Image 1 (cartoon, rainbow, N blue to C red):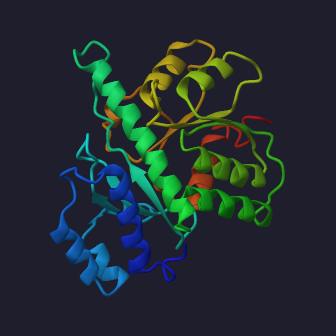
Image 2 (tube, rainbow, N blue to C red):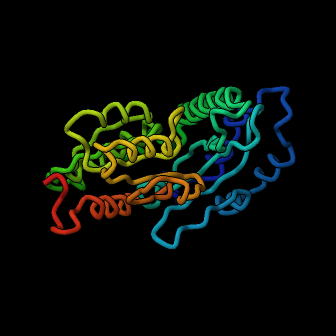
Image 3 (cartoon, helix red, strand yellow):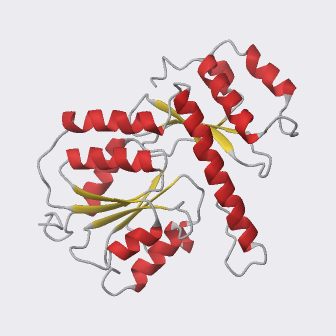
Length: 284
C-alpha cells in the first residue's frame, strides 16, 4: 500500500487482529492504556512514533517500523510495517524474533524448536487475517512484483539463480522480478530442499540465501555448501532481517539487510555474477 494511502485506521486494525490471535480473551498480554494511546493518534506519523524505527543503512535502504506485541507464549514477537522491494510501498508482516542461537546439544533445544513452530504458525494465522481484512501483506507484494516484472523486462542473461526464502509470497515475487530481468530462477523454501538440489547439475551460478529458515537455517546451509568440494566456490548472497555477526558465518560473497529495494538487489546480483577477469556472466 502506498504510504500516502496508509492510515492510522489500517494500523490500528492490524494491531487489533494481531492481539485477538496472539493474546486470546483472558490472557494477560493486552494493555488498555496502550490501546488508548494508539487511539489518540491523529495521523500515521503520530501513530508510528510508538514504533521502533530501524536505522537506514549508510547504503541505500528501505524503511521498517517495529512494534513489540509478543504473544501468550513468547514476549518478543513484533508487528512490522515495512517498505520492501518497491519504493513507497508498505506491507504488514510479523517478525517472530526467535532466531536465538540455541544449539542442538542444549537441554531445552526440543522445547525451543516447539516454540518456534508455534510462533511460525501464529505468524501465518495473523497475516492471513490481515489479508482477509484487506490490509497490505506479502501477498500484495507478490502481486505487485508479478505486475512489475513484464514492465521491467530485460534480455536473457544465461545466469541461473537459486533463491531460498521461507516467505513463499516474497520468494514468488522475487522470482518474478528476476525472471523479468532475464535470469533463470529456481525457488526453494527450506535449507534441506536447496541442498538436495545443489547435488545435481546444472548447478546455479548464484545462491541467494535467507538466513532465517525453518529447521536448517542459512548458517547451516552455508556451512554445507562451503564444505562440499563441488559447491565451495559457488557465490552466495546472504539476506537477513536479523542482527547477526558476519564473522561467525563462512565466507559469503555479498550481504543484504532486509528489507531492501529491488534496485539494490539487481545491482548486487550483477556484481556477483560477472567473471572478475573477463567481465562476462558466469553462465556465459
